[in-house]
Length: 214
Image 1 (cartoon, rainbow, N blue to C red):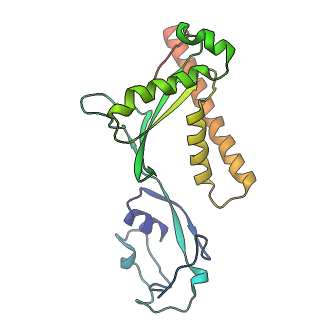
Image 2 (image 1 turned 45 degrees about the vertical axis):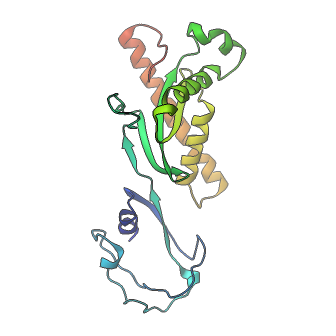
Image 3 (image 1 turned 180 degrees about the vertical axis):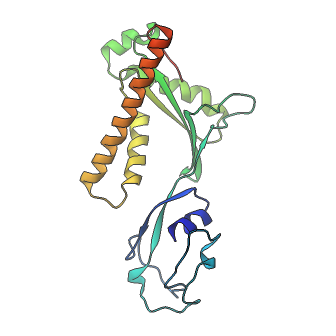
């Protein structure tokens, strides 16, 4: 059933079902009970159920679903420019009714322009990369600009940390605090492994220390 509901709402996947009024009890008539779906139905009313308004349950048993946000490659910042790289992801319904244009940027604290500041303050290169992305994209971006900057030594920028922490928390919704912390830790661990592998390939291919690439 959860797949049918999430698809009907416009999402591209479902994460889990909720029971016992996890999101709060409804009011008024309970219209559907004993719902049975195959998963191929185009809408919930195409599933088998007892009949409209026929039920033997209360609102304390209200059901819900947690859907997966729609992700699309390519942020579509402005026509005529190439924003179809795999690193650019559009997350619909992110905040304030607007989608988020997430742009992953890898930067090196060893570049001459930031080396002095990076030697004094951890995360300076990632912060500078975030600021550059905001300056370049916000004037032409209809979405919420979310630069996900990371330094070549796997130090993630503040916005990236907040964004990935929020995504991990959503994935672990309803779980214990320990489980949420584990999901967040696993997410950053996997991201860092992917980053290290990409940097290693870049060094082996180019035989140079990478500066900025996105």
